[in-house]
Image 1 (cartoon, rainbow, N blue to C red):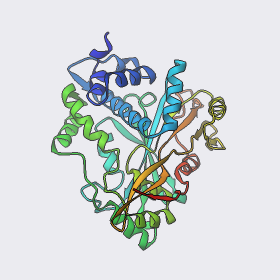
Image 2 (cartoon, one colour; image 1 turned 90 degrees about the horizontal axis):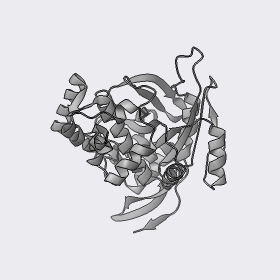
Image 3 (spheres, rainbow, N blue to C red; image 1 turned 180 degrees about the vertical axis):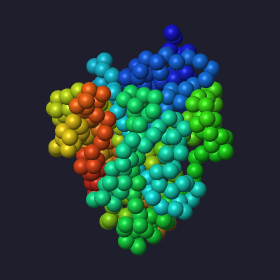
Length: 344
């Protein structure tokens, strides 16, 4: 079948160039049944796969180290086994028109066919993580790791700064988007043109929805939570995407030989079956307001992660779980302090 006749290509092509759509389809390991689906309607699984590919594309455009790794994979003829994407939310009401906490994201994931798989207390970070796994293709469509930061566990000054930063948040889902999500919930599919239209606002949900933060507020947040400071500049964007690899030690060795900054240690789950490491977060330039001026600061951005998953002892498949210790170790990738300011 001609690739440009498939539903997945049609969905991607609405939002990226033909060349980029073809690169994503050729460089990511996608189940044949999803790759080959071609009908007037798109299944929820294909729409979920398209969303993940568009979010990967967004991350690659924001993270130079991630792009370099991906380009190496392309040149070698390899494929990315897209394991999961991770993002951060804020458990706080009155964030403009945006729903509080993970509901801003899970209201999208549920219609796409995702269920919550496991809960992970991230107490050192005053956060809670939850993994979401696709019902139809749990091992093949990327999972989402969605974390919530509990603002009420911080100081009063922190709460006030967080409120000021997020008060301008806007909800990208309009009435048409919500209607399409309800149809998807009920029927598990959408006409391809409607699905393509829906993907635009869905992708925008994974971005910063509030205005440029004040530098004073950023510094208040950074003093107590590097994670909340990160959210203030990056919002609900993918914090990282992850390649599921066969030998994580070999991958680390290759990346270090290439001169890329990789976490010193590989995080190993309590079961021993899940091993994770990552690049250090890219340094990115972001705007802040300060005394009527725009100040630019170098802050941590997003990054790329690697995960190796062993089979479960009962032979039912690979271990798709996460680990609280691993997760809190990976969170440190964006905890680097910001560098000096420059004025634009």
